[in-house]
Amino acid sequence: MQTEYRFIHGRWQLAITDEDYRASRTLAAGCDAFMPDDEDEQVDDQPRSCVNCAYRRWLVDGIECRYLCAKSPGASAP
Image 1 (cartoon, rainbow, N blue to C red):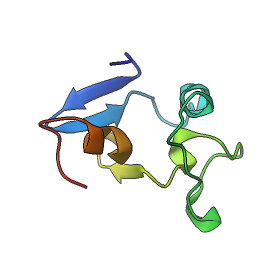
Image 2: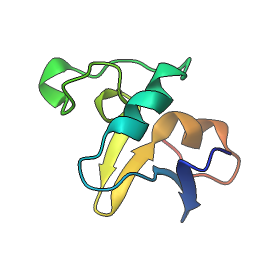
Image 3: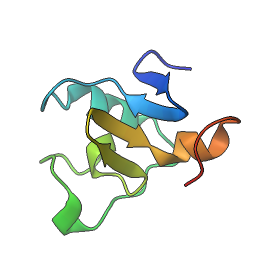
């Protein structure tokens, strides 16, 4: 799996810090599963960004990709 994600406690978490969304944009550009979230839920100025994806879930300590979780055995259910 890409080093931009970490599998922690059954969840695929995006490894970005604070509001540095460059990695999020790069990953989303190459993601076939990207689906834009509702406009009022988007936080990045660039529309195609993992943090603007409908599969993204905010966690206390990171951002989870629910698409990767759904595809991975042993991951938490959506």
